[in-house]
Length: 197
Image (cartoon, rainbow, N blue to C red; front, side, top):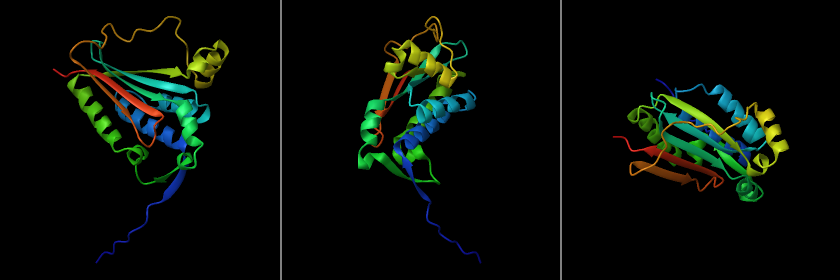
């Protein structure tokens, strides 16, 4: 005879910044899947979101075996909206169940978004993911702050705009989706991809 003991989940209070980072981290791991190593990108998220609050946009470019662009995902952070939400009593902290995914506790749609992108990678023959970062606009406009951000995150600025692919995402077969969570309004996800043939 076995006895089942129910234990209450361990609920932690997490700051809005920690929840934002945890959500972006889990989404990033899903968007990358097994197509790219996560370690350096996750370090950039830790430094760029938690430590310095300088990352404004992370873009994932999905390429096929001919290095043609099949889709792109943008994860954008509105830091002004984040700051405004973090100063209200209701927006400062979240109660998070340690045993569950942070992203799913914020919005169940995130799992659907990841399922969609995983199916997309297979249907479009995606074999590579390239990741690009943008800093907050006030940092990018100031050469000294921009250089400091590059140094902090260990990035190298390209001299000329880097072209990801010879093919752009345009035309009648283009699918666009945008999502912003009700619980984390400062986070926006935009997905553009070719319609699988």
